[in-house]
Length: 177
Image (cartoon, rainbow, N blue to C red; front, side):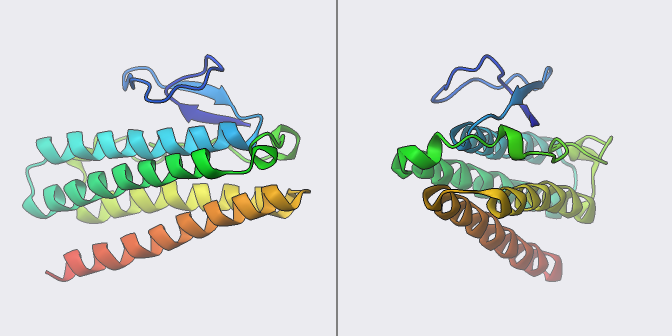
């Protein structure tokens, strides 16, 4: 499976620097790779939303982007914890053969810079990315063979679903302001 990520050198990096001008592609071969990619996805989203917040002209959109940046940064830290605490057998489980999933596109459908999107367009963009990740975890969970991998994937799926619901509640509250 190919996923959009800021690094494809095959090495595990604790805190790689992101180059937003050149997003590269990484082959996800194991659940460990998938967790690395997920952590980096949340970091990239956090940075993208923080940049957009600093540039946006609409106050509500700035508030939303600032909230989203903080939320994605927190998710990055949570995912890092998964990686540190997960069972080695689960982390080393190969997922390459199971994946028929399309690459997750962090910018799909938004040919417009985030700083030029309105409140609703920003919401659509963030939910699009999270829903793609949820679909991926569901697909992998259906195909997981060993209990350790099933447990880890279920935890990751539960986290993404819970946080997406939380985002929906918060964005609805902000919209009602």
